[in-house]
Image 1 (cartoon, helix red, strand yellow):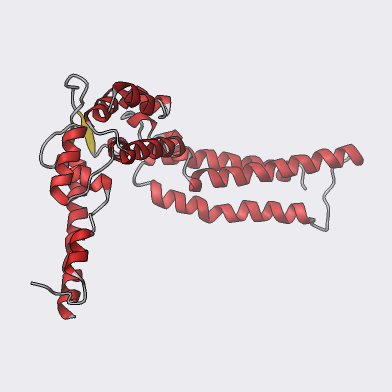
Image 2 (image 1 turned 90 degrees about the horizontal axis):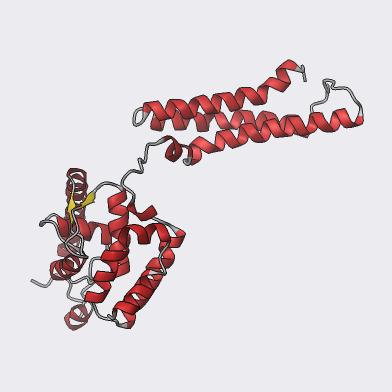
Length: 113
Length: 165
């Protein structure tokens, strides 16, 4: 269903408006199980189309680790997998609930157009 | 990406970060492409890490530790204000002693006295804010910081009280 008749669909396809909140994307990726950096990038790209750069990814990992929302697992050769902690899961649930509220409100307004 | 280029990009990061992430970051870079986007992303992220470091993601850093508490503006601002007030009093005393040789109470409070009063009063709501915000979250460390703030406040008042200024 098309609810925004003034938006050119071809243009929308070219600029899908990737969601970009690296820490949240990392948390969401790790909610599906422990992963190392490369697997996270691929998983996030599959989830929402956003392709995180290596620097952006490790910036998010560093901050999430400092907040104890994710934790490192023993390294596998040179790759180190990470997993989400209980605190990280709580934060992810809260953020996703807020986002859901936001998207519902946004869709409601678009339907009203 | 070639291992050499990956190593060069990793070297742009601060030492504390490299100590923690260098090996896995290099492995990630080597597994990915060496396009302009990856290079720019790594370089800008390294710059950002220098400006706003994650300290290598050190898990031992407790956000409610004494040092971390002291770094909060509502903790160090009152301390700074008390120390500034104390310094002002001491400098004023030193100047008075150097010129007249005697410390006396000035009936007409000058600008230094007004500034001292301002510094000692304005810090009260800041201390109150700090106490309300942090006492429940980290009571032990908050009490230590509050004790330090009280000591600094009393130290600033001491010359006024003992010398009857």
